[in-house]
Length: 207
Image (tube, rainbow, N blue to C red):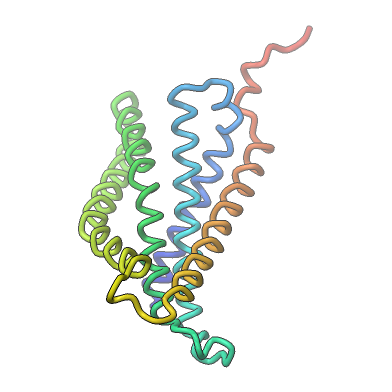
């Protein structure tokens, strides 16, 4: 449990830094366009995914521990809801994480080629490790997750009674954590955007 919370804390910090970095280039990326804009959008999506994963894990853990002790939830199949929500959350995050991760990894490779410093090497190494790990995990886990989601939605003969309630509750959980991730990343990004003007030094001064 401690290791999980430590990893979630690290993920939260990385997402926080990503949001600040994106915020500092957000307005400028609109002006410059091109690859800078693509990178800004990729970083924004990456930050949302990071916060969403953190909130999702914490909420699922909380429901798993606290849910059974709440009388109002006693009649709901919480275990099925948690399993389905976990699969949905994983598939949703990976769907956006892999392509945006590739963009960020490619950008770090280009920067390392242009500026061969220890800092760029460390960033590129970390991005390479993260991208490979996420891709391998997705290849292993996505098929099973999609299969379980498909059974829950279109179960046919194996569809359980009351399955609609399970699906609705799982979808509700996903909506909550995605909104939380989006609002958090957006708030941090907008604050950084207001406080930092990357084009200030480029603006001609009036005589």
